[in-house]
Image (cartoon, rainbow, N blue to C red; front, side, top):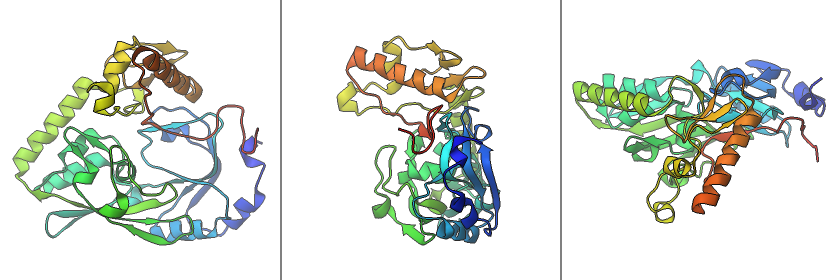
Length: 319
């Protein structure tokens, strides 16, 4: 039995009556774009907000909870993820156009689908989402942005469920967005978001979506196993205006390899699983890049990819 499975039999007993799909020792690699990493102690796929709330309310205190979406900006460590991993699926992907050029969207909806839905409703301001490969819940929590826009530009409100199963609301003040960050607590699982656009022309929006898609395909390794931008861009005053990829390139890391993990030659702020790379190899390569950038420029790069779980060979409670 995997080490993750040996600690809390009461954990599983407490959820035995919960509706929804529960799977013990469930592989998470298939849910990550890197296609690497260990299992979840328990993976839960709720079919409604009511089920999700009931599950969190029944969960014993002290059991960690982690939510994952599209897995496009995620690295799951080889030792697996202790506690409950919640995966939001199609039941949380509804998109509803509201009066006043607003859209209500489920946290499990893909950013790209929202951009297209906004286009079809002749609502502008969502085009940048065409360049972000993920789900809305994750995009809101990290204030995702690309191609001249970010979530904070269009955010109205968000609803979520906290660790105790309670509903909780966030407006712009509570979200307190900054660069690639929000103040929404890690233990709150977002379920619904309301966003504000402006009246637009469908043809012009379509043209902009095509521009964003082409720019992304031209600049990024879109058809490889990657996790999106690996590191945040440092503050402009600290890095002299240089972006993370420029610092990585200047440190001689373009094309750098560690085992089966590689720094992309097309865009060197992307790590690539060239085939069979472990999460340990990918993370170690990222740390090697950080070391070389620090030595070359004096700047500490900060991970943008979300890393969860335990390193290979570790289990919860290990020293």
